[in-house]
Length: 183
Image (cartoon, rainbow, N blue to C red; front, side, top):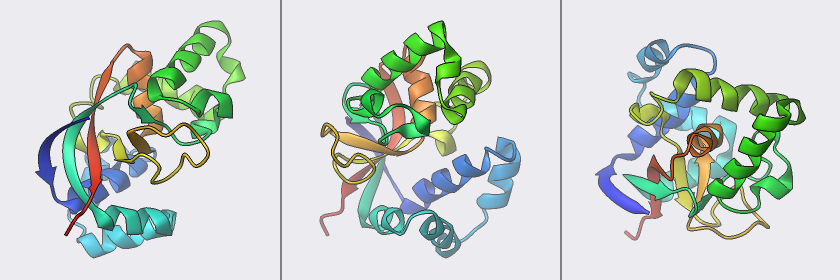
């Protein structure tokens, strides 16, 4: 992991909420709706998804940075993928997904069968340019991977985007990276 620049937690919270809203609205509309919200409102939205996420996001010092696909892992069964595919690194998960996409994509769950090819076809060029679509990485063992191989980092949000990037051949991914705040 390479940390590039310290960022305020509100930027990460905006990223989480905007990237979720993009599933329903296009990016400019999602940004227009979310960017004016105060951090307290973003906290309420995040708390509504998972209280542990809300608490964890507020404990972190945040950075933009670059992670290698072999040093971070995705959520257990991310996007309905088989557990065996999500046990290791993002790179390993992408390898399984790439193989099945070439052979029989119908074997994927509906979410991963639509999200990953959709990103590969329509969004690949923007998801590493737009900071509000970066994956959000937490320290390994923090969330979403209990019982799986411990990695340097766990992708808390943006697993489908990160898998699509890795399937397309990316060995690194721009992301928001959380480090435990040592205040």
